[in-house]
Image 1 (cartoon, rainbow, N blue to C red):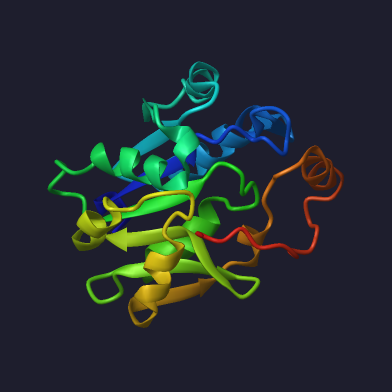
Image 2 (cartoon, helix red, strand yellow; image 1 turned 30 degrees about the vertical axis):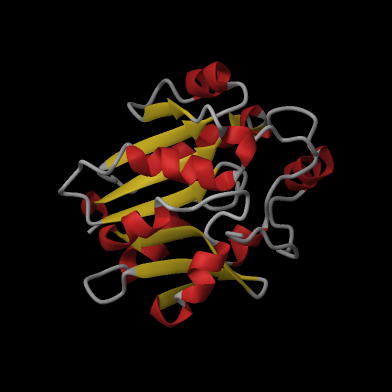
Length: 207
């Protein structure tokens, strides 16, 4: 099934709270963007699209060892929705893609095993499969191709939060506490470096 799913890795943010492009920061010697792209490739997905914004060239260089499609969202400062739409535009003509996996570059504990849990639950009857953590339904998420036209209408900085909430009855939730660990500040990264087994306490929803 994973070979019928494409992946969009969102890595466009300016990381204002971090003070630098956190996508390029390293954990255990590997940049966060490289970790996210590697996780997708380990699942042998049909196609991987990386959406960049701030420091686009450096982010692209950080994943140059993979054959991912790297596309710059020129409107990245308008919010998360524009990056999702930018990524989806790269997939709209791929008729053999049955679903889209959307991930973030700043959830470093989400690995290929995490993605497998979502992909294993995605099938002909479970068409929206989202991570559940800290009372949140969020990314990573797998969405069936039939929902792409709706997602293309997203606007602003709230991602697909309201979109998912409005379709809660259609969402299959997979427990993924590791997705609650994100990197927003230098302290977040230092804590992960000191103890990657830190208990998930904060949510980073798709909202």
